[in-house]
Length: 258
Image (cartoon, rainbow, N blue to C red; front, side):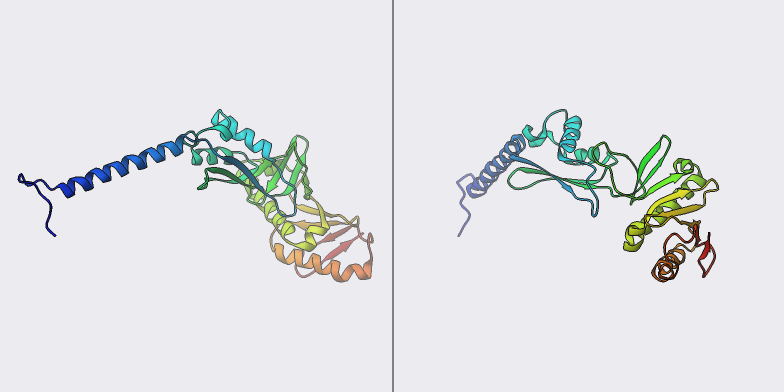
């Protein structure tokens, strides 16, 4: 079939195609603009639970943070007014929040997913009071909930120090707290981690009165293995409260003292 042209050589089929393209383009732009100007059909806030622990946040607190950042209620705002990435970054500035994921689905439903930081220990002595999170962050104690985690007490000032020594001490105690949190036996056993004046580490069990002397975190896995085996075998022979301390510092042995 030939190309339809008039006597002046004008290609009407091409012109018609261009006009249709422009109409579709304009309609598409109008649809996008209309969608942006529409308000959200629904706002859903999902707070992922902390495994084995209580939540640090509730939905009302998250919504309040969103309103403070935006300056208006996101539930009744237009989609154009809510910059998703900027809102995510704003929420992630809260130390309770590890990740914020915000998206809009095909039904114009705004969903906010909150992944909380997981506290694994509480550092408390005098005015110092914060949670040590699994990712190493220091998060404030919450007025909403109190977490049931091992207490780190004693000379904890060095853990808060920004010096190289303070960072080293913090890293060592964090490593120990992670080991306790991830091990079912240790998690059930250890009530408290006490930092001595010379920064040596002593653990206090939930059952029994002995002090478990760890010293430092060198050969930590071996020391904790010895502790577990002692409680598995030695307690059957020695009973509870027979010794004042268990010393794990020396290689291949557990030293007992009254």
